[in-house]
Length: 415
Picture 1 (tube, rainbow, N blue to C red):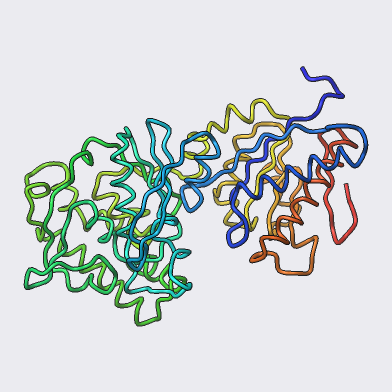
Picture 2 (tube, one colour):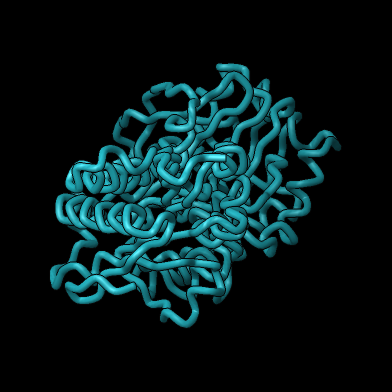
């Protein structure tokens, strides 16, 4: 038992604030604010901060794994439009984490110019190959933040397959070329069949159709109405080629497990998550990847349960706390697994009324939007400053009330 005067241990376990701060930067800013509360009071340290930046299987997954103790490994891969980019993977000797966002993601497009038809997932496949060279038992595939809608053809090209047109010429793996695919040739590269692949994702969209990758995610990648229709038709064509036996390869058409998966492409296309990352989801399923909840998998991978058992208070958060959060996003998973200890959420904005905080067992919700009239969502400096202020306010609440907290509304502290 800690004494009543012992510093409180606070586990700071946020997701990123997309567009402004990484999960690690969010945690650092909150910790700085918490530490400043004790210094300002002259009472000495009132908190000990444990930092656990989190991810849910999307962008930021590699950084979260590295922050928890994985080693960072760098490789050069093809960016979304072919330019070389420096990418990182995380590896702990058994498990490697590879992500779309830092290999062929939206943030890597030159000058930010969207390329909905030309962007490719090839760099992601190249990073998977690099990870294989380290000899992992499993590879976690983090699919968020993609720039492409290519059905994973770019990724599969890097892993040993060729997508051919009617004359037998090789096609680059991108959205524009999907409709031109006539057949597929290739074989699984050595090591792929002996490695466990895990897609840690909470995206449940099918490959095509009204809830498919082009319709739901295409517009944010720059796809026009016409582009969405073309990409949807291309993905359906790809599935038709695979399912109709258009794969000629000793590695796939030999009656083994891979052959059966390619033949089942039509049913896999309807599988929840097949539309993840512009259809990279179905490519992962074709490789035999299993799909698990991204939030819970990463909480397990980063040893959240053991970390929270030694703390008095948990602080979590993300860019927006809203209905989607309640539906099972990362802060909801953190809250669900935190037990009876006080749970504080911090967000860029909160659309969740106070009477609904109890649905996540939240003690309080702090929102950056309550501290400023400015838009902090694209301003890392302002976001970090406000998070430090929030951390200080939480710390002052701990100093005054043990593990109690206070919440700031429009410039005044309220219990």
